[in-house]
Length: 326
Length: 287
Image (cartoon, rainbow over all chains, first blue to last red; front, side, top):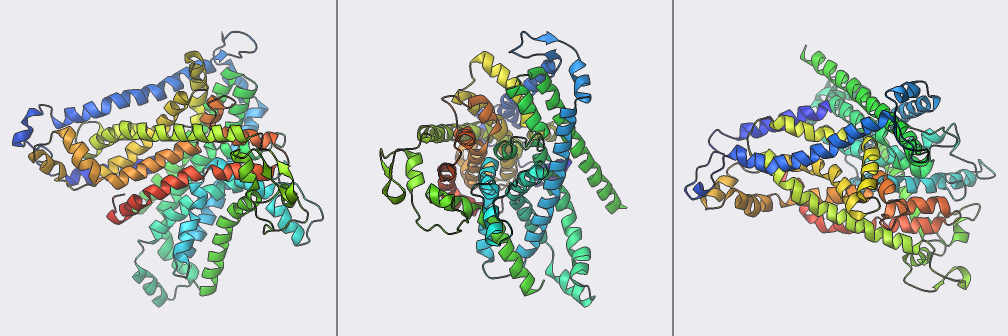
């Protein structure tokens, strides 16, 4: 993630600036028994954990690559090496493309809705009004619940037997009997709403933090220059928010690409395969159909998807900062 | 922004956030007949702990709607075991995360050495790798090693999520501590290890509390690993138990709502305990 790499650079350099050349190289008289240099001490602390982490990430990546080259279904017999044929199969598999499509639509829906909800909420919460402190405290609730809890909550909203939405529609006299909210046409949208509900507080707090650094003098100047609400937003607020918006889009898009809990709890990829994303396709192929080798292939499709998404954002950011520098 | 727009927006935010949670809470304190009444009502008429009592299973007989006597829910054993397993896994993950990650973060935040940025970045990239891509190989390896359906196996996998994150958070916090802190400790005769344990660690207590809470919440809310590795076994944690209830217990919405809401009690308790420290963190501005 390029954004955080930038932050990484900042953080390290800020740290390094804080270290005058002699501050760390303490040769305190009583500490002489420590015969290690600082760097050696640091390596001793870091390297064992690093090795374990590498093993825990390198092993599965390598092993699942090996699995993806094999036809492996425990219910059908022993593992058989087939080379890249399963990758070729995936390229022409409608189920895989349907899952890619589902992931793309889901990611776009979640990113766009979450952006609007959290930006709107942050702009409101940035104002002064009575009850603001209380509202700030409860706004974080959905995010504090885990994603699976968010799914449980939303299932109770959209249920056809006891759902709140059905209840409201009926009380308003718009429907005579309960309707299904999860249909082939709407399933992805419902799941995206639930995911948005859970992740939006992250954006709200991130945007609030960015808004809080805008000097209020600027708005006074803006009024003097006869800028309207939209003008002030465009020329004063937006420049401060731009980077935050991109960072939140990266985080939300990656989270949406990896989302699984919400789909498992709300739709199980259905009705039919209308809300099937790559994560659900991997789960289904591997742990329901036991086509383990092929599941590993699809998990690389997911990795490719995540890489593509982050690369797009990387270029967006790069172009923007380039533009800014010019 | 005009007053009206601000207040209208505030009301909408409050409704968007709160109504969904209110609704599941309402269902959890209703009898089934009331939940399924058509047209529905939005405020429970006879609030009751009936559903909670059925799920908790401490009472052999529970008085229900209009005096009907009911036995504990068939899911009660599973839910209680799931809660217990989740507490064990999340607590063990939290403690081990701190033991493993804090020294690394300390070295990263306080010492200069080659490849530091590279190492930090490598640790971060593990965060963006989709867990689903590592799930299959772990599943097979666990099957071979006999770790499938064990709490230890799940704890181990949760550590791969929490450790990199806490290393990242704490590196920043350690780096922000006053720069002469160790020096003074060393001058007072501490070894490096003592300076870390007795001086630097207490100084960053608020950050440690926040990290502990984050590690606990991540482990508590993790679903995919828990489902695949412990689903349907004795080691099943709460999320897979709830998932199982979803697809068996048709027509028992209140029971599920109560079980799900019981599942947010442990994180809430922990958050309440750590709240003071974490609030202190904001004041210190260490993040």
